[in-house]
Amino acid sequence: MPRREDFLNRIDARLDEADRDGRFACMLGRTDREAMGRLVHSGMLHSPYPGVFVRSELWQSLGIGEQQLRLARSLGAMHPDWTFCDATAALAHGLPVSHRQLSHVHVCHLGSGRHSRGLVRWHATDAGETTFASGIRVTSLERSAVDCLLSMDFGDGLAVADATLRRLESHTDSLDKALGRLGAGRRGIRQARLTLSHADPRSESGGESIARARMIELGFVVPELQVEFVDPLTGKGSRVDFLWRLSDGSMVVGELDGRQKYVDPAMTQGRDAVELLSAERLRESRLTRSARVVRFSFADVCNADYFERLLDSFRIPRRPGFQHG
View 1 (cartoon, one colour):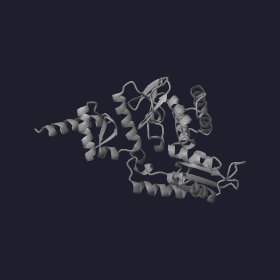
View 2 (cartoon, one colour):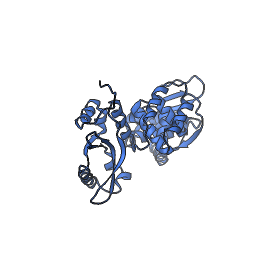
View 3 (tube, helix red, strand yellow):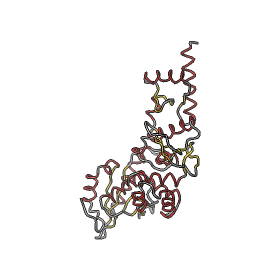
View 4 (tube, one colour):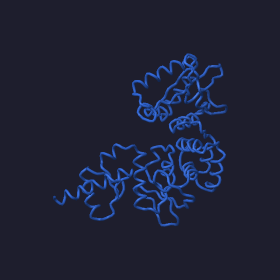
């Protein structure tokens, strides 16, 4: 068997083994890394970090979150002493982390001499209590959430805070105490406290949290979350994402449309997209007997001007004392 074919078979075996372990292949030897580099140049492989390799087709098929988790597992295998923190740790704990927060892998270290460059961002801090989540060593759930609150803007931070409260099955007290203990004197503490003051464990997804953050930033009255409407014909309950009760006694339901509810097997429960869309239209027709329904996508939420005009068109009230514009 030709030597090149032997090499390619060995590489395939390494890539397959790494894929089964939910990570990417790590090549530490110079000869192997140089040979793998030629395969990267040919387009067959992708290298997200020096010494880490994955088939290009697999890399492109993965979502950003899964790319980051597999990369962190790979780096953890190469550097067993590393402790991941901030957005990387939050992702490993299963918290909703915005894609825009996943451009770096965050790692704790003690002392000086490490400079953040390229993919890895170093945090000169003691990791404190650590645990394993998603196959990597990470800071604790509360510490990871606090780090995110300190470093993230309102919307992304609120998504993490809401989900952390759901996981802790508590009100803001426990996370507030953790913020006071772990965030005192650190940059971003004012923003972190503001974000946490609006946290609500009833929010069921990161997208809903970011939408609510946008509503707050635009000065709208904060909606009720996950209110249940009962269909008088069937007796079945249906929860809505957002609900506003207007001064004239009418109600407006807000629904965040997401592609995930139509394609994620955990949410579709074996039903196809056509069946789900039909059921959603029927559900909405029943809701409109009790309230007007405003639907919006995540893209709508990100377009602040459009989102503001949309909510204004449904007469969603502003908070008392809010100064527009």
